[in-house]
Length: 399
Image (cartoon, rainbow, N blue to C red; front, side, top):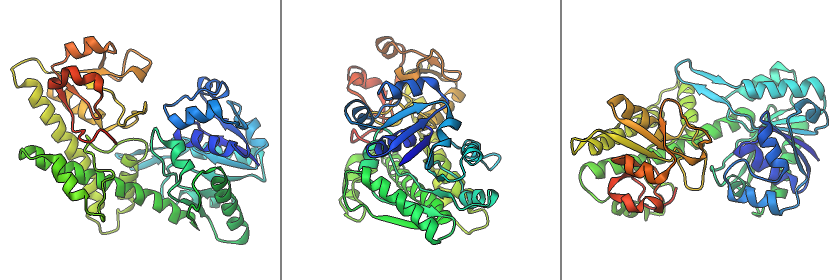
């Protein structure tokens, strides 16, 4: 099958590789450097499986910046371009997705489209109504940064949403399910075909539940830290209950990344006329956690009457990741700067000498000497020699 994928981030590139094992896939991106890297079989993002498959597997995969030419020949177009939610304006910017849909329909009257970008509830149905079609489907993505291809090779489930459940739309949805299963290593993957608006709701509620779990263990950690208790012991005791489990229980500075912050806020906006308490609390809890972390760090930085020079060890949130989009530590940085602390960032993956208005020092030895407190969302052995300076809540050395 001739497949085109718009966008080569974690979602787009992992799907491109998965499908290129058995199909002809063209990946489209506006950034020529990324396109060149993919064509040279070099991953533009940090992901073990993506790098391995690009270098060592037989893939029918090419990348291009010529979107229209690619769309003309496609039987299926998968949209995985970035979207953003503006909380102040209560506005979800889906312009990149809409742009792809418009381009495809302008040059191809037979291809069907599967949206994988994060979108607001009701978007897919609105697009189908706008273009008087039923060729736009939605399939939520459930992957982790740094483990994107792995999570598509071993998917927890496959969900596809259709605008109306007739024979043609069900056939398209089932074909897409079969394509994903064909590329996966895991057998017997459960799949569900539902209305597209229900599928959009699945994505928001699933991510909001993950944010709830992160927030719960973070507040447990706040409680234990303030009372001088051993957080790890409490978490282990709680997590031994099989109904709770020991996953997603390592404290952090808050939830962040591509989806959780915007999905929780967008879901809350969807609850505007629906009675709720929990959704609002999940959003508020992330702000409270960052406030608390910033206060603890500032207290540590000024306890000896010294100038508060706070080092930020990596902007990325997770182990084995170079992604720091909407990372929680950035919220902590802003709070520290507002308190008057001098904030210095160590982030080798930046590729530049500046990040917003913060100082950058990517000489690790100099960085460690310069700062009197070093904040690390996730620990690394290269900080062991200055452990007395480090503030972290990473208790289990995992995400």
